[in-house]
Every structure is written in structure tokens, then in C-alpha cells.
Image (cartoon, rainbow over all chains, first blue to last red; front, side, top):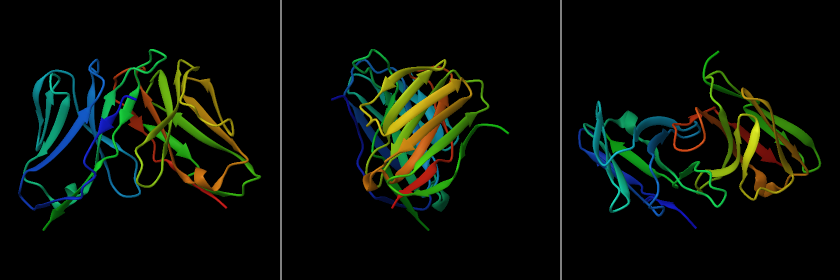
Amino acid sequence: QKEVEQNSGPLSVPEGAIASLNCTYSDRGSQSFFWYRQYSGKSPELIMFIYSNGDKEDGRFTAQLNKASQYVSLLIRDSQPSDSATYLCAVNIELNSGNTPLVFGKGTRLSVIA
Amino acid sequence: ETGVTQTPRHLVMGMTNKKSLKCEQHLGHNAMYWYKQSAKKPLELMFVYSLEERVENNSVPSRFSPECPNSSHLFLHLHTLQPEDSALYLCASSQEVGGRPQHFGDGTRLSIL
């Protein structure tokens, strides 16, 4: 079964530090990769997407993609207590039907300590 | 209104009841999705609709019945649910199926008595 794997955490980092979140996926044909943030009791919110190998930066967030190694990561610089949330990795996976919807990992819980 | 709107936000129902969840998107997207999110489990894809046609049913029990009357509206009809069906049900939409960013509604918190 094609999967998306994340360490569930919790990952604890001090305020101002860099938080590094990792995700691996099993479908070598995946082309689209997303990071969502989900606060407790809320719905997932898209924060980054990346389609090409390498780095993509948006403010304090950097997504890194390595298709050869089948992993995607999210770096959060200058972490703030408000960044404390669960971060979901999503990857488009080809199903038996040929459709390629997004499949989500279990998420990594990040705790930024003030 | 903008984005993806789900109603009701909370629903408590008995196992013999029939109820429906509603989702509406105002983004002009062509694809809509139902997900189930249970504690300590990943988001589970339930159904995928593309231009009102169901293109994916991820082995969901027949007590869940989706309906997509047009590309802006999606329903999930519920009947004779089980306690293990208690979860957060999330609706999402995207420009098309297949690797496009999905935008989520706030979800319906469902509790089965």
C-alpha cells in the first residue's frame, strides 16, 4: 500500500530555533508535495507546496524536496509559540483507479517552548 | 462567503438516525473530497468527485452515501452509523483531482451515541 510517513512527535524546540519536520513517501511517481498546519480542533491549512527538487522558501518556511530519496521536509526558522501545531505532509499518490488524489501522513506535532 | 463552508459544525446522532452533512465551496473548483479524521489516525480519504462525477470510493461502508448535485455542493448522507464512526468529517476542494492544493472546510464533529 502506498504511504506517507511522518514521525508523530512531539517535536519540541525552543523559541527562535529552527524546527525541522520530515516526511517520506512510497510512490516514486509522486509529483506534488504539500505541507499543512492543523491547530487543535481546527481544519488543515495549506502553508507550502513544492513540485520540483530542491528548496522553496516562503517567509520563515522552507520546503525541501528530494525525489531520488523520496523525502520532503519543512524547515521553520525563528520558531514561535504560535507555530505549535500538527504539521501534515500530503503527497499525490496514484491509486489503482489511476486517480492521483492527495494522501496525508499522520502528522508531526510541533511544540515551540517560550 | 469565501472558501469552503461545512454545516453543521457539530452533530450528535443515535445509531438509527439519518442525517446529512453539507459542504459548499465558493472557489470555482472542479474537485471535491470527503475525509474522515479520527484521533491518532491520518486523514482518511473517503470519496472524490470531479465535475460532479464520483471518481473514487475508498472502500467506504455503504452507511455513508455521498451526493454531488453540482460542482459547488457536496453532501454526505449518514444512516445507521456505528460508534466508531464518531470523528471529524472534513470536506475539501481543489482546482482538479491530482496533485493540486486542497482547501478544507472547518469540518463537522460527529458523535454517535
